[in-house]
Amino acid sequence: MTRFRLTSVAIDTESARRELLDLGAGGYVSFEGWVRNFNEGQEVTRLEYEAFPELAIKEGERIVTEIAARISITRAICIHRVGTLAISEMAVWVGVSAVHRGEAFDACRQIIDAVKHRVPIWKKEFYRNGDSGWVNCEHCAAAPQHGEAGHAHAPHR
Image 1 (spheres, rainbow, N blue to C red):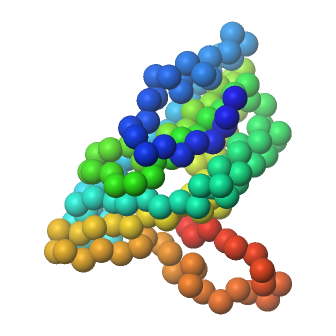
Image 2: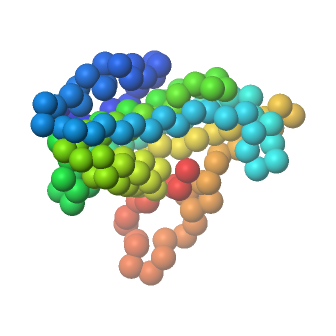
């Protein structure tokens, strides 16, 4: 089972949820990240997500595998949209099944937090006033810190 995916079409949550079904699981938790219409004082009209697909998938798989090794879960999937998204569309979905709900909640939160921090996916917002801007991409252009030369880091989103 592929644990991390990128898609340019609407996320099929029912299909993904069926992939998580495990007869030994007593709990299932999911998270949906939606495109909102307002951010940091600006009225947002749409978003565009760009990714470095090969690295994004590799890092996304690594994240889910690492978390599954730390937390007792039965299955987990994260799906992230790329391309242009309208207000209210789903940008990211995470689903986790586990024997107990606590582990499912913990793993779901850790997966989305790590994906937002580590996976090379960038978000550009378009505003009602005609401006646009990359969100939380300040450290994309920052000089590497001591000991970081040669290492690429994904921006926080």
